[in-house]
Length: 301
Image 1: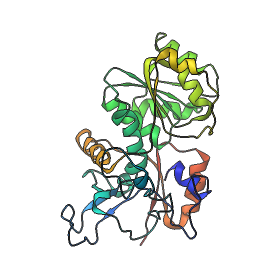
Image 2: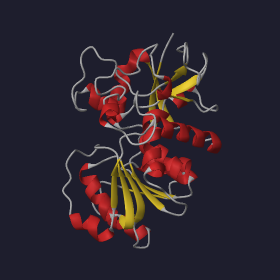
Image 3: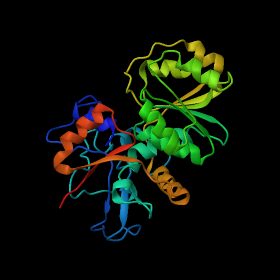
C-alpha cells in the first residue's frame, strides 16, 4: 500500500475515479495465461507490475500518464486476477516472496528514481530522508548499497533506533524541532547534504533547502506535509540546488531496480500484512503513520 492509494480513495489524487473502482497500485503474482504473441513470459512466471500500463522506457508523455494503475481512472490491482500488457510486467527477484515483491513497483521504484535514476547518488555523498515510510526506507537501503551516508528525520525515538540498527542510518533528527536543518549542517561539518529525497513537501521542503550543500539535488516525491511551501528562492539560487519532481518511473527502470535487488540481495522491509477482507483496516493503519516500511495486502483463497 502507498500514501497515494489513500489519496485516491479520498478523491484527492487528481480527478476522482469512476465508481465502482478497484483500488491499489502495485502487486506481485503468477502469470496464468499469456497472449499468442507474448514471448517474454511463460505461464507460472512470478512477476511485478510497473506503475503505468504504458511507460516502457524513456521519458513519460501525456498519453502514458493516463495509464497510471490505481489512478487516472485505470482500475487497480486489489483483485484475484488482473490483465496487463507484457511490457508492463517485470520478473520478480528470485529471492523475494510475493509479499516482498508487491512492495517494489511504487515505493521501491520511486526511491530508486529519487536516489539513482535522477538523484545520481555517488559513494561518499550524504543523503537526507524524511520519515520511515516505504519510500524512505527503500531510499535508505539503496543509498547505502551505493556507498552513501544516510541521515533521516523522524519524530519517534523508537523508530530512530530501528533505522540506525536495521538500515545503517548514521543519524536522525526530530522534524518537530524547527532548527533541524541547522543541526543537519552542524552534523555535516557545516557543509550540508548532497541529496534530499523529500516525501513530505509543504514546509518540510522549505526546510530541506536549508539543509542542502552547494550543488545539491532534491528529488521531490510527496506531499505528506501539504501542498503549499513558502520559500526563499535564494536558498535555491545561492546553493545552485537542482530540484527534480519524481512521478514513479518506467518499466525499464523497474527492471533495473529488480536486477539491483537481485545482485545486492536487498530485502524489502514489511511492517504488517493484512488479508483482502481487512483492507479498510490496512488503510487506517497506513493513515496512522505508525509503520516502518511497507504495508501489504494478501489475497486469501
